Image (cartoon, rainbow, N blue to C red; front, side):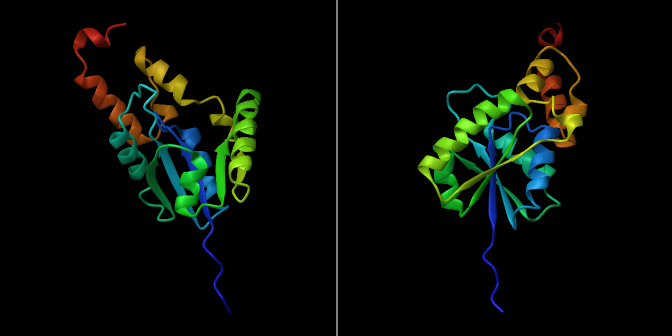
Length: 172
């Protein structure tokens, strides 16, 4: 009896910060593949709330008890990272129509560039469908409590960052 090849899925994004919606999609991707790589995009065009090392560290902490999930960084084309890491599937979360429009275009371009790599869309848990990193960052920057929208390691990182800000920077 021959062993089947390892199926690898790639869940990619900036994850700035990782949200419970991301966690839901990444965790569910483990049912589709033997290994799931969380690819943290290095995007010099963005001004992230969390630096790359902190994002990688908290994501690794969140999934520390799940040995089939690993965290890596990449820059450039998603399909190039997928090929380099042996991923045959890209898993993307789609919250609604706006996401669908963008993600379906991205999937078609990726299909054009790499016909051997499939994209699978997962809808998040409806209770988490409204959560986006952009909304979490914005609420956080204006003093909002976002702890119920992010996993505990992210909440701890955000709380520590807030404590290190100057007192006047915390006033809204």
